[in-house]
Length: 225
Image (cartoon, rainbow, N blue to C red; front, side, top):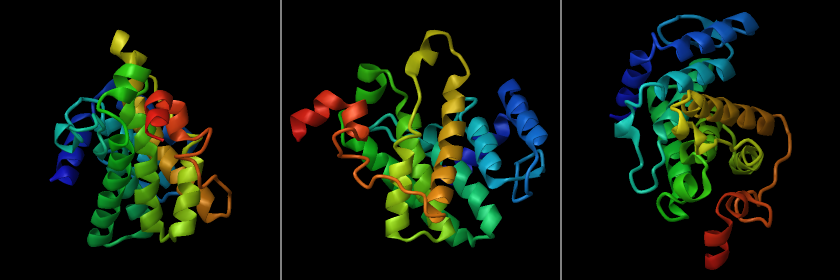
């Protein structure tokens, strides 16, 4: 149901100006035809298909059924777009794509659950969907690529340097909120690609002295550890 819900949200955003900008930019960049942009039909690199689909998924704020209510994280908009893009590229079976999505939800949800509800968004000013979502995107993409545990851990380490998203969009309703989903979707795939090629990333990215929780939730994390 979450998959269907997110696809519906993506389709509803086809005529949004932000979607047009994203698709037009990707078209001009060109690249190897690996994955199809939904509705447009263009075959583009999987990285860019994930970007466009992430932009579409979060554009109309219609992805409530994919909301992780306990944490205020919206995993669907950062897990399903990369799963669709990479799944298309590798011609995965439906069951494998669903498993990758489930794993992506699990990863991003558990990152959020480690702190109190609203801590990232309202206490620290970070968009929780963006900073946790890139890890879920990497999990989904990496699973479909067949990465082993070592390479997935490395991919997560790389994600730590890609987790970003300011909550300041609330001040004006700026489009950066939907960009967060697009950026996290694309960056998660990129992290999985880099890990697969042997690029290194710290395996202590979450708990390290300069890791994810120290940077994004330093006081609450320190009080528990």
